[in-house]
Image (cartoon, rainbow, N blue to C red; front, side):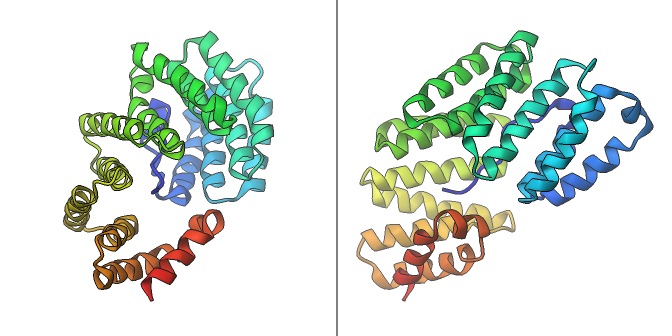
Length: 294
């Protein structure tokens, strides 16, 4: 699946984030934290530094991210709850991204509990969605459900904005269990919320999830039609998505159009073989694309 941009950030800092450019985001957070008004605000300074650490972790600079979070610790006593919640969340995210989910779990749980006590619904939903990621498969659904329930009931916009991401995550959990009808329903719900948010890129990703699920449901011509329309949408946006290339190859392959499938598998392999995340986490998938492109 293509990686989806994470859910909402704190409103005061959200405009500084570009999850497709974590290095640029880190530079913006560093400039922001040097402003005199931020330097004098202990809590805001601490919270901003947690976002510096998050941007560093997204660049896989895990030791540097931990060092940044060490700088946050002395700022937490006497500070507000948001900084403390953010500290737990981002320390947990660094551990999880570096492959240490066991150390991440108690930090996410602490963030969930403190956010719930403090009435910080958006941060609580964020913590709940991270707990769903690091939990055992048997408990993933429970945490997704708790996070979704809070997002639905909350009147806070930053909590409600999480609904699209949560439906996406629930969809992939169902997909991985082989519950393709359930996954389709979740992805369709995610699409509705993405369209309401007027998020063109995330809307295209939501459509891709639906189309892939249709293929697994045996509705290959329908899936192919959606992927071809997505190809046009990406082109109109001046971008390309190699995951669409991959799905076009899969659809043509199932329909017995070997030459057409090979062409799209070749294009998908050319792009996805450059992706460090995919090479690290799913090398067999990259190899399969190469084999099918020959």
